[in-house]
Amino acid sequence: MSDNLDRRTVIGAGLSLLGGLSACGEANAVSDLTGFEMPLETAPHERTFMQWPVSLDVYDRASLRAVQSKIALIANSIARFEPVVMLAGKRDKNGARAQLSKAVEIWDIPTDDLWCRDAGPTFVKNKAGALAVSHLRFNGWGNKQKHSNDGKIAAQIAQRLGLPLLNTGLVGEGGGIEHDGAGTLLAHASCWVNRNRNIASQADIEKKLLQALGGKKMIWAPGVKGKDITDYHIDALARFVSPGRVLIQLPDRIDPSDPWSASAYETYAILKKATDANGRKLDIIVVPEPVDIRSQNDDFVASYVNYYVCNGAVISAEFGDDAADQKANDLLKSLYPGREIISLNIDAIGDAGGGIHCATQQQPKAGIV
Image 1 (cartoon, one colour):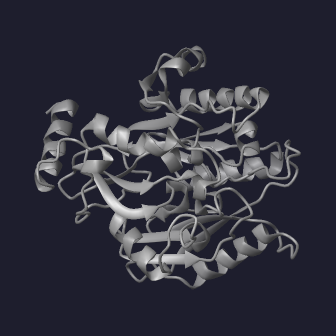
Image 2: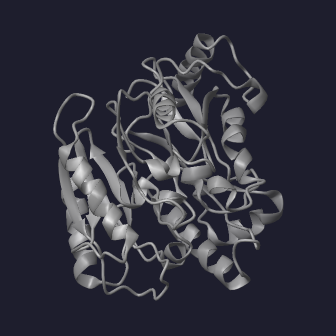
């Protein structure tokens, strides 16, 4: 059976299951999330989505050129291993095309900024292999940034792909939640239990997150509110490598004057005591934080764990601390055997407050794989 026929078959199964939905605008969102789960990022991908940044409300012209260059670098690197779709409006297509390899496809979907992990579609899958988009409604990280285009992206992609758009009842971002693909979710409460996104109790938000991503067990850590635009996304600190296995980045000590180091160690302590959805203690691997980095920006995000796993490779960052960069590279090789480790200088994106994972969003392959 061809890939295209297989995808049509399983998508049709999903639409039938959800009552024959054929249009996926927000007005037609589906409320029944039963049976869908978010696959682990290591599962096979159909493609990667990314967003072309264009907003001069966010960047000055020099900074915008710099982040565009790094987004093109990431996209071109991933395109060696799997299809990549760059989202860009008609007026921005030529600028994007000039920097992207021919392997990168461009879809006419207008964007503001580059953070596809947060504004893009969060894909989930049922046991029949049918895909849907679990809609974590993006509001610019609590309306801290204009998002007139980015706030529409998830629904537009669901509609273009002919996939159900599942109404989660949540406002939030994909970078704020980790799923091990086997029922365990991990998040900082600071970016979910926050009135700038959800006016609800932590228990209610937890219930909705578990339903949205097919989870059975939630692990919460407090996080940090109001110190960065995301209210401390978990994917800058800790990631599930596989079910029951977590990679976390830690500084060498807690700095009492630094809320990030205190919160990182607080999350680490919670993870050491936690169990997953199957009742197992977590296997926790620590990667040291880089120190001697190129960027002099106080708000620079130097996160080794904000990598992206694509088909056959791990796309990661290096920051100019040779010893720490090499240690992180070696660790990723050991954690993802059989995948090529591609380390990139993405400093302009770190200066903008994020990393490679923040800039990417995977579409899992439909069907039973």
